Image (cartoon, rainbow, N blue to C red; front, side, top):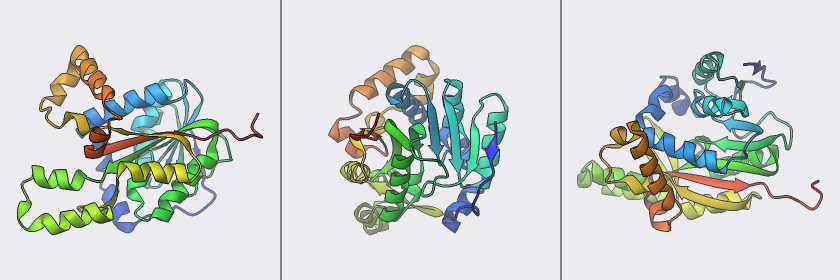
Length: 274
């Protein structure tokens, strides 16, 4: 495991976001959402190229980088939060060998066309302004080789409303929740995150030059499942649950109510590509 010394100053990110992540919450977040983690892994295992170099942009503490490295990929994790980077180094030092880089999605310090796949598993909901998200997507396109795969996670636009209903906050919160649905800006104490409608996510990705864009619903089809840990602990039940969810992951209704989305796309070949 090696780390490249950055050629620029540490990346600038929203102070509230930096302070929130500096508390260490990211280290356990995916452990608290095991079905999201397993669904994402299943989708990536099916849709990523079988081998090659992957850049995990905004890769946090290295959960996906370690898994991909163990699967035989050459992995570069890019992360702007120093604590996350240190935690990722510790993970990499324990046998899952991947490289770590201080940096962020809008300015990747890699040559053009170097990666077989790029993961954006967090940046699109941390970047509130559309021009910032477009810049991150353009950078992902730039570093991908022709035919390379993008996997980009996003928060579903209806998540604030579904949470509002589930928590029985109908009194006094309707206007705030409807504003979140209209603007896409979701207050998640103490930070503001961006949420996407599926068609908006598809448009943002295709508009920078990606092709074959599909948007999948990660969590929309298990809203009534109450025994997720038990099902995931049993191999047969886990396989049945993940298989069932994969059958409807692209259904517009499921995608529309999903709290987490995954977009898969490719950098197209041009006439001059070999």
